[in-house]
Image 1 (tube, helix red, strand yellow):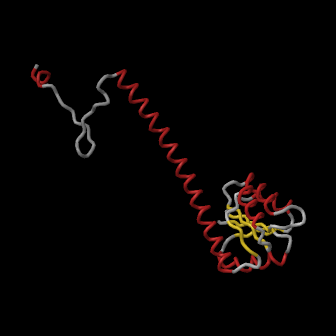
Image 2 (cartoon, helix red, strand yellow; image 1 turned 60 degrees about the vertical axis):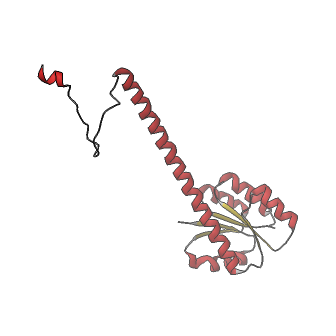
Image 3 (cartoon, rainbow, N blue to C red; image 1 turned 180 degrees about the vertical axis):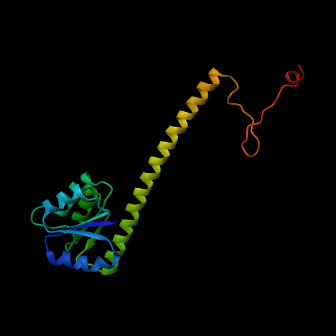
Length: 180
């Protein structure tokens, strides 16, 4: 299940976001209080975290920096009514923000940005899983190679078994041992 965390001090913004995003079937957790949002980071894994830029307790960049520490895989986005270029640069550099979106937002732009963020999150998760599988397989292969070297040292020639096209072991007899 894809979970999205929404953080904004304005409950009307959160309601509008939930209404807009509900048809997509994503599980949305909305918070007006920073501490509740922080607590939720310990209890849930989020694909995307969307935060307002200006809030009374803490700004969105600072919140997303905390979120990045707790959930580094989550894609982080800022919603802001302020087009401050310096704020955007700070958000991107300090909290590694994926997208900086304007308030009021265009529905299509917001939905598209969230879909892209979710796709990237899922790709990262899949890459981590595949990398873990690859590392496991490499470790197993190294153990097998080590065992083959050990067996070859103990029983010279044992690893040079001849096989047919189906993988069956071919046994060759020495003609002298058959007759003698």
